[in-house]
Amino acid sequence: MKSQRIASLDFVRLVAILLVIMQHSWTGLQLDEPSVGFGRFFYHALVVTGVPLFFMLSGALLLSAPALPVTDFLNRRFKRLLIPFLLWGTIVYALSVVMHKYPDVSTFTAALYNYVPYMLSDKVNASYWYIFVLMGIYLLTPFMQRALSSSQGKQLTRYGLLLWLLWILLRAYFPQFGSMRYFNSPAFMYIGFFLCGHYCVKYLTYSHTIRLVCLSVFCAAYTLNVWGLSIGVSVTLVHTVAVICLFVLLYSSTIPQRLEPFIVSSGRYTYTIYFVHVLVVAMFCMIDMWGWCPLWIRPIAITLLSFAVSYLVAYVFDHTRLVPKAWVGI
Image 1 (cartoon, one colour):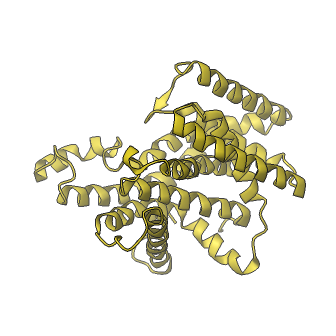
Image 2 (tube, one colour; image 1 turned 120 degrees about the horizontal axis):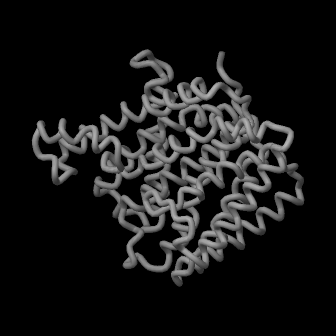
Image 3 (cartoon, helix red, strand yellow; image 1 turned 60 degrees about the vertical axis):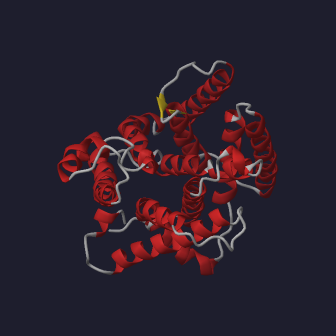
């Protein structure tokens, strides 16, 4: 039986995947270089909220769900994650080898020899780093579910968030404190967002006043992020506040009924869109067709086109029997 979708969370998911695609479009066009100028900080401060939104989503869905036996939970989640990763990762790897993207892979034998090491690292495509971090969090999830479903669950969640915020403050003053890094990103940050998503959905009550406060705080935090990035000041705490406020705003938004089917289907296709978009973005960034388009509009144009193509690919797999849907991430 199909699980019931939560349209408000699918809306968060839609915005998050658009921000992730925009970040990769921006990078693919090499517009994050200092030569681009001050404007790049406006993009950076916005698009980096995409991945934390995904971790908040995962926490909102998984930590509030009934606890399953550890083996059953890991079996379900890893199948859903690993099979699409192996399929799309292999496709990306094969295309990259053919296009000579890997300097140390120039022969068929070298391609076979490096396949497994590349799949187990960021070398297949750096954009797939999210999968490895999510796997690590999945290993912790069954134990977190049991702890948070107890009578002390709300209090434990608050203690966990307090420790997370204190850790962020300590990191701001002592950058090496508690350093657990993956691609230069503190791993504990993602666990904190994971827990925060659970708290925001399960325990917060959303009113018009709360939404206005979050909107004001998000605008202020975004402005501070841009300023901090431009002068090289750590903005981790402000970035965290911006992500939480954006999540609350999106989750508590009223979704027009006519848009709900598209938003829900986009939510179902998110994994497929995530895996496919790296190929589509790379293609659009390589094609010399953007001379007519103002510099700051190009990432938006590529984002919308890449999303549309990736959505279409997912739609085709969803409505045909080319391969089982679970293989492609649906």
